Length: 70
Image (tube, rainbow, N blue to C red; front, side):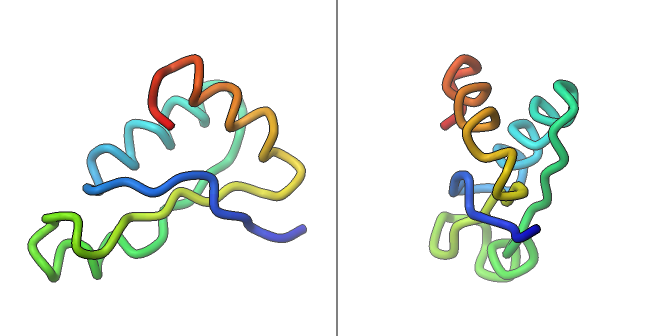
């Protein structure tokens, strides 16, 4: 089981909203690079990455597309 990048966001808040939408549907997700993004002021210099398990990728991208978050 490996993690794959599902999406990139300009802020941790946007990434957290997407993560929570996925977790509400039973898909585990984690956020990478949130601290680096905050260190640089959260202005989108460093994207916050949303990661999911490889086997959940197709379902997760479909859910985010429905939510308008990808």
